Length: 130
Image 1 (cartoon, rainbow, N blue to C red):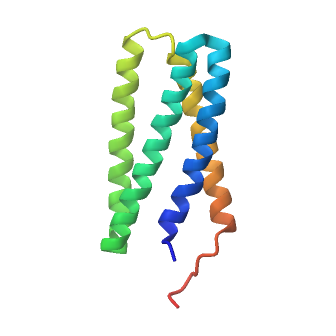
Image 2 (cartoon, helix red, strand yellow; image 1 turned 180 degrees about the horizontal axis):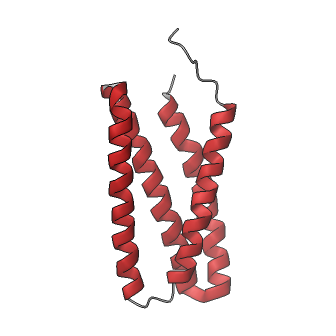
């Protein structure tokens, strides 16, 4: 049986892949190549961020369950600092795909959170050790 962490990661990545294809197509139609690249970059950044968080939390859970909160908070602070630095660098470059990237970021966050909520509500995870 796969761990809940692996089962959690797969639906988010699949939903992000669907959004990547659809979003890049819409971005391409509305804003050309830079629009498609911007939406794709936004979706990929969010998917990588959430996937990294999930993998780090799975690692911490495997070591000691008491490590989940501190490792989760450190991962959160680190990834949002990195995303801020990346976004500041892109904003300073006057790239035409910046606005589509922002739309891709927002859409990807909403899709990932919705997918994760659906997975959590429908998953059969024992609350006690059997």
